[in-house]
Image 1 (tube, rainbow, N blue to C red):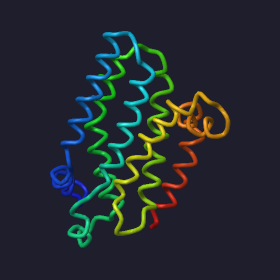
Image 2: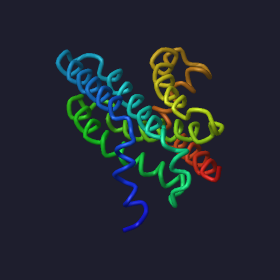
Image 3: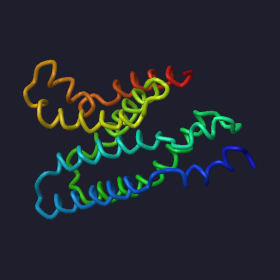
Length: 185
């Protein structure tokens, strides 16, 4: 059995699942209310995208990182395991929320989720050692909030605030390069 396989269950046990459960419950409730009232679908979808991207970054928080430094498993492989576990946990949430919401905007929602998650993960891996990478979890939520508030004003600030939603693929490419560059740190 490989070291990655052996580390999978202990990694899952060390993760904080309460924020995932609370966020998932809240997102499903918001989507259900949005469907029941036929209002707020774009906002509910944007909130879902931002919250799930934030959970991806929070999954990087490893309270046992110092203890596991001596394990024959690289930090990047441990991060990959944490991200795989969070992906397995949030996939059902994504499917339920997108099933509850009307189809408006769903075609661009998944690329937006990928772009926001990758941007936040790129920021998290560039956080200096000794600092909490979980602070980068605020990035997707702040970016979604900015898009909902300032995005309608136009101009450079409005354009940047909507970049994650209107041009997710180029943003994903740039963030992916930054994330890959941070992997050697």
